[in-house]
Length: 193
Image 1 (cartoon, one colour):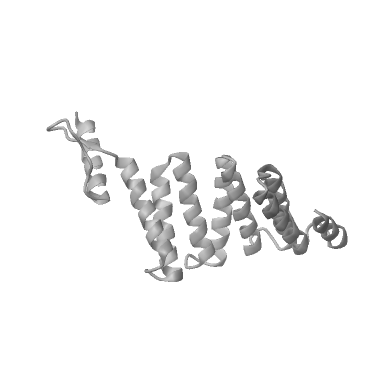
Image 2 (tube, helix red, strand yellow):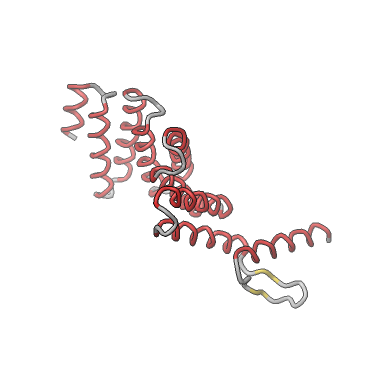
C-alpha cells in the first residue's frame, strides 16, 4: 500500500508506475484471499492505465484481464465477461490472434461461459483459443490439446445422452460430431411432429 501511495503522490494516479504498484498490491491481496480489495485495486489500475497510456493500450488490456479473473473468482460473471471482452478486443486489435495474450483471454472466456452454463459459447471460445494457441505455439503445444479437449467436452455437455426414438434408450454418441448431428436430427423431428 505504501508503494501505491508513494507512486500516486510523486507521479500521479494516472502514471504507469502507480498502475504497476496497484497491480502488485492486487496480486498480494488475491493470494491473501482478499478478493474484494484485490478487485478494487485492479479496477484502480485499469482506470490509471486508461488515463495514463490510453484505453486501447495492451497494458490496459492486461489490467482488464487481471480484473476479470478476480471478478470470475467471486462469481461476478457479468463483470468478468465485460472486462474479458474489452481485453480481448484490445488484444486482437493490437496483437492479432496469434499471440499468447489473445489465446489466454479466449480460453478464460471459454471457462467463464462454462461456469455460466452457456456450453455453446464456451465451446466456441475454447475452439478459438485452440486456433490461437496453434498460431502462437504450434500444434503440439499442450494448451492446444487442452483447449480442444474442453471444446469437445462442451459439445458433449450440450448433446448429453441422446434418446433413440426407435428404442427409447439413452445412448452416448461416439463422437462430438455424431452427437451434434444426432441433436440436430432430434430437433428437426420435434419441429415436424
